[in-house]
Length: 265
Image (cartoon, rainbow, N blue to C red; front, side):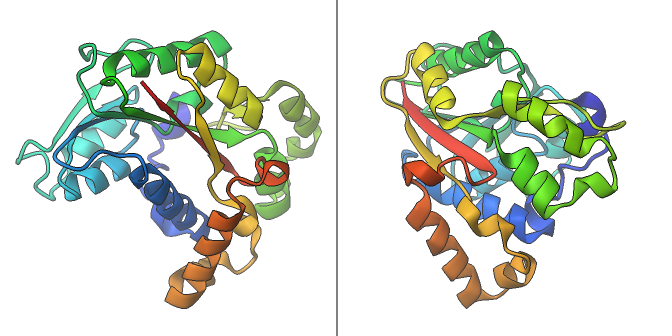
C-alpha cells in the first residue's frame, strides 16, 4: 500500500477520468444527506491527499485530516487555497485504528479509504470502533468499501488490466473467494473487497445499529464513453440520476465499484 501511494497516484485520481469524477460527485452527494451544517468539525480519516478535506473546508467545515501515508499529509499541508492558514484543516499522520482524537469530539467521521486497505476483519472493525468513539452521539460515520466484484468488472472488463499484468485473470477467483486483492506488480493497488452484507455486519460489530448502505456508481462506470459524458452537463446529469435510481436495488448493490455505508454513533 505504501509503495502504491508513494507514487503520488492518488492526487488527481478523482478528477482525471470520468470514473473518478463519478465516484467523487456521488460520494459528495451521499455524504451531504447526513452531514450536520457547517461550521461543524469533521474527521477525514484516511483522507489521502485531501480532496474531500478541501471540499469540506470550502463548505465551511473544520476538518481534522489524518492519513497513514506521510506523502498525503505533506500534500494537504502544501495546499495553497487558504484552508490551512485559516485553521479550517488540520492534517497529521495517523492510523485509523488508533486515533489521536478525544471521545465524542467530532460531528462526523469519513472513512473513505481505510476499510479497503485493512485486510484483517478485526482491523476494519477496530477502525469503525474508533470512528464510533470519536463521533458525537447521533453523528454520522461514513465508510467506503470496494465491491467484491470490482476486480472483475472494473479491472478486467473495463480497464483490461490483463494487458499490463499477465496474471490478473488467474487471480480473480482468489479475489472473489477471499476478498483479498494482492498487488499485481511493483507499486500496484492492493487491498480488500467487500460483499454488501459483510460491510453492514462490520458496522454492526462496531456498535452501529442499522447502517444505511448504497452503491455509489452502479453500472454507470462501465460506460465506454464515460469521460465524454461526464464532461457534458446534460449527459453528466443523466449518468448521476441513473446511479441514484439504482443505488438501493438489492440485486444490483455489488455491481458498482464502491459501496458507501453510513452509521450513526
